[in-house]
Image (cartoon, rainbow, N blue to C red; front, side, top):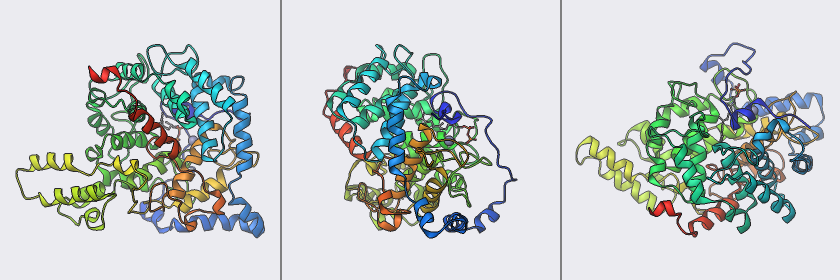
Length: 478
Ligand SMILES: CC(C)=CCC/C(C)=C/CC/C(C)=C/COP(=O)(O)OP(=O)(O)O
Ligand SMILES: [Zn+2]
């Protein structure tokens, strides 16, 4: 079985560092822009077509579902005996595999669910949170993975197995007064901590104010001169941390603290003009897993266009969101109301008012009726081309790039990026995208995922509804 990647380790454990550099010196912005992204799939296809006939070319654009399902199911059967190297990341393996199967619309037997729920329950610490295996100390990353795996399986047994009261206590123990979170007792503090805690707290409905205090300021201090977000203040901007930072702020409706135009400027140049895939940081190679980390950033930005436009053009600029309508009537009127108030009072009071009255970004992700009024800011076809042509492994599973082997981390995040790219041209959340938005046969279409939490949409709604109707946790009341 293929071994796991170093990036997978970085997600679960420490930070980046090292890695591969591009073989060629970086080209100037204008040179890179000359090559239209629209051409890149054509280029890749052209290369394949010259060595293969038409039939082979269309096969290459097909998602090899059966092979991927076989690969994933085999991995799940051997979960307890293989991957000793990932012994402290076993909830991650559960999540990567179950989530990948869910995106491929595969249903698991009740035996698989029961076994998984029992296993994850054994990873749950008596003081809250989940460790990497039974008896291991709780860690925010494995907690996120365990909760997402349970949400993905769905059903009452999976959801009630999560101890929300203890979870909140664990989160508050990891919380630092300046806004960051330790990943575990005495562990490192970085933006992953904010995201994993807030994403889980959002789903479980335990977003208490003391948990959220100073998070926006902390994440803001991690935005770099390039525009992306680094793991901690002073660290290099990176796709993984940018996703974590932006998603956290979106969950808190505080994306206003970021310089969004600068973030957009950084992320648009992370898509390889030739390859179509994304790199994680400047001058590095493209890698299939960033299809989700960077693709997810685009998916979030697509829902933040009113905030982006207001930052770009100033509040007096053309309010596209208001003039074109927003996701719901109340949001749109909110937006217009704020714009109309512009001349009143002092600047600070006004700024405060705008921030508090801004249309809530999280609403853009909550309702299945929400309309997506803006198209993607990246080339979604080119990204699909990279995933389908360069990341699929014939024997099943997806990978970082050609010549690498498949692993479950890359399978999960390539498929997560693929579904976001397919959905990026949808006009309504949870509505199937138009056929032209799906590269290759329409049967390539995957189940949609929630871009803030990365679980399949219908399970996200099920869990959110379930926990909204559960009694408030005691610490909430006190
Ligand atoms: C939910 C959660 C825990 C999310 C974590 C997201 C995250 C930080 C992903 C990126 C992982 C990482 C630091 C790869 C860098 O490895 P590298 O230096 O080998 O890669 P590079 O050359 O592509 O930068
Ligand atoms: Zn990777």
